[in-house]
Amino acid sequence: KPRVLSGIQPTADSFHLGNFLGALQQWVLLQDEFDAFYFIPDLHAITVPQEPKQLRQRTLRAVAQLLALGIDPERSTLFVQSQVPEHAELAWVLNCITGFGEAGRMTQFKDKATRQGSEHASVGLFTYPVLMAADILLYRPQRVPVGEDQRQHLELARDLAARFNSRFGKTFVVPEAQIIKGTAKIYDLQDPTSKMSKSGPTPAGLINLLDDPKVSAKKIKSAVTDNEREIRFDPENKPGVSNLLTIQSALSGKSVDELVAGYEGRGYGDLKADTAEVLAEFVTPLRAKVDGYLSDRAELDRILAAGTDRAREVAGRTLGQVYEKVGFLTRG
Ligand code: TYM
View 1 (cartoon, rainbow, N blue to C red):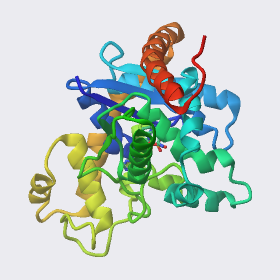
View 2: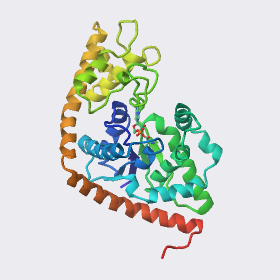
View 3: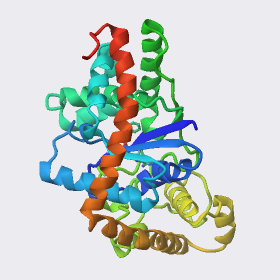
View 4: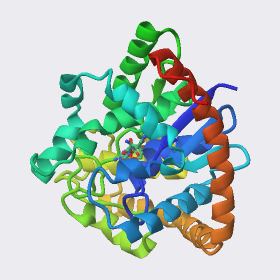
């Protein structure tokens, strides 16, 4: 079977709608045809300050959410990054073939560093995309399902794979980003020209999957739209309305065209009410399942232990070849 790999950070109590529609919904589907590796990048999380107790809790919550969304630990390898030391070990080697300028061109680093004030940004934040390349290349996946905002990081991983291969001989697979067209970028409800993100301008623009659906309904009802009345899909001129159509379409399985046809002669109030309703239908059972997984810590630990073993088997093999190729002594 061809392989896929992806990760999602444990930096909030809940995944948000952008995470689900941009990335996680594909993770679930890809399990059928691919040998899937999915993990929680906690090493990435500490590139910005984290409260230790909260990080541990959020890591468990992230695992519970993936299981509740349908990641099946029998079919997919599910693990936490810090439990597989090969990630940090390969990252070091890749750091040594990455140009300083090359790393400095990563736009997400520049954005985050600006937000923190560049004096306070950590060296870890600078080298974050190289660790991400290590995450990927260790498992030699053909595809990496992510949202649009990870495209540049994927490009770096591809460049580093090709560079290592040409310098030391074929070792890595050069992976492809797998980005779903319609939902690659879900926008903030209050500022529908910037992406939905937990660090957005106001919490009112962010839909958390685990929030009470009544809270999310309020946010949807106060979503920024425009001064027209017509419901049509036009991301350029009607970003707010188009974002709601994208969200409702993805959650309901109905096409955007079908939705637009059904809204002829109706107003934004209807569009918002229906979107809130399909969201509630989706999150209500999900919230219950997450609580179920979280109430059985022993089971979560068992799942992670099995995932860690399987991940280390694959990662260890790749790292062994890398160490040999760069000229390190064989480990006794
Ligand atoms: P993270 O944790 O920020 O996001 C997880 C996934 O959600 C996608 N996403 C979105 N998609 C559409 N619209 C949005 N508004 C939106 N916001 C987030 C992201 O593109 C991502 O796919 N660096 C990664 C984590 C990572 C990783 C990896 C991913 C670490 N190592 C190796 C793939 C392979 C990140 O911070 O994603």
